[in-house]
Image (cartoon, rainbow, N blue to C red; front, side):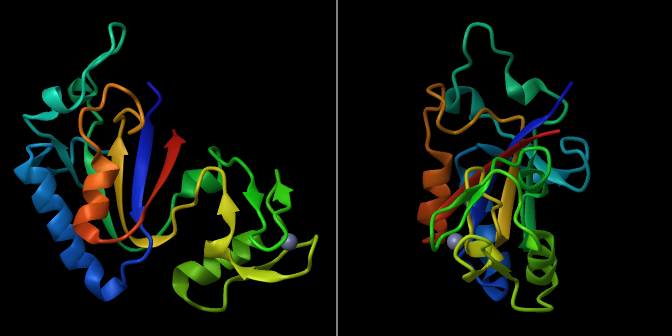
Length: 192
Ligand SMILES: [Zn+2]
């Protein structure tokens, strides 16, 4: 079975504050019983994640032909605290980028985009990517992407959870993250 995910990213939190901010987000989701208390390794593809909690049945109403995602093997919420982005939005789930300066849309990645990403990840350089249309350089994390790359220091991957704009959702999970963190939340997605 192919795996789908939504990745929610706090792009504004500093690396110093990311650990505490994550703890606040996790505590809130646990209080709402949206996720369980403990991390386990059997609900994500690698690493650790939180299984959906007991209130997930009320939080999401499945459609008639839809299987409850909380019964899938891979259904955990995987947190990451470090410089990170959605690799799949750069690869198989790539959907074009737009220069923030001249608004030219590129359906293929501009030259040196991967160099910019590498520099951004390990902070080894300015991570500037020059637009071939307007010749203006912009930091790679400020380029617009239809499926956002989700650059940031704090992210949560929701494995096989339906997209959060689907009508079955009775709670607003990106809104919860926004209110707990005090930051805008970027939503990205991918298929594996
Ligand atoms: Zn441009």
